[in-house]
Length: 412
Image (cartoon, rainbow, N blue to C red; front, side, top):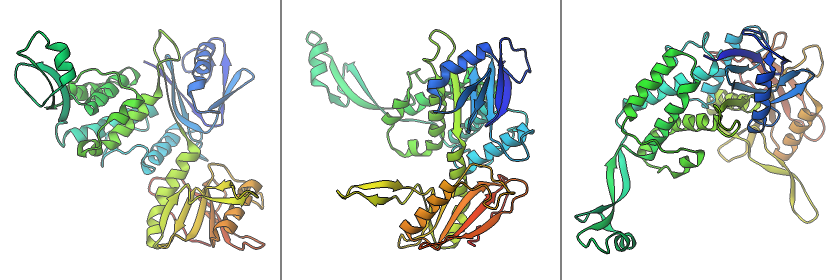
């Protein structure tokens, strides 16, 4: 059973020659595995120091042989409580719809005592189970066979090739209602894929129980490209949240990193992107109350035009609220950073402020927001009025990463 080593983002682990169990360090063996995995991780996921490794804002799990690295988000004031940081990340993934379990899926999942990987797997198991309860997965599958009676349509080229002697046979192509369809093959492949990686007996039992539903399904070699071959039908649409999780797990396995040995595993999320998606979901109900529509990563405009009329310096706001006519009413940028309550500027970087000023002028928007995670000593809201030609109102807001928090999105 793999040991779990939890580390907070932006912190470092010492690297020593020989590691013993429960030491908050990396041994040289695990450091070499991490180095071999580097090209398969997001750029900048970690950096090497003097006999140490420092992790960036990419949180999740990295499996290194018999050691599971669990990289957790830095929730201010809870850095010494891995279970709190873990719970915050899980609820952010739920709210941002990165992991979409069915209603009530969290029941029975012990976030306090489980690592992130097993939490992800258990959510997947419960989500898949809920879909299976709605009906057995069957669909028409195209088949080709050499038959004694006509079925479907004759494949002339194959018929001539196979039956030049056997005149009594017909090479046919036909559709057959079957369970052995690509969707089921992906699900079976994912369940088998996850079995070696789970740490808890309960999770392994869930995987094996689900596999019983796919006993008659062939073991097809599934890759990320296989998802492009799925038909866009009613069944596929119903299973879309489950398939998205399958895609995440399949992408997480690194089979080519260590040839001839157990593949490595990494499932990491960029906290900058996750915080942005989480804020967007939290903001949607309030935007609806205002009669506005929420857009992410847009609308895109350019800040300048060259003499040859080619647009340059593209602007792409994290979150924009537009009215029914598509006119921006509020632009918000999210920042997964810590502020400084002792600074009159609150620690807001000049580049971030300049970026919002550019939005104010180019989009002619009256309200802007910079949104940060909450921390001790800071208020939920600080107001600024931009000066110059773009006198928009800018709010610096801090939001606690709490499951049942009600957020006040007042403008100024």
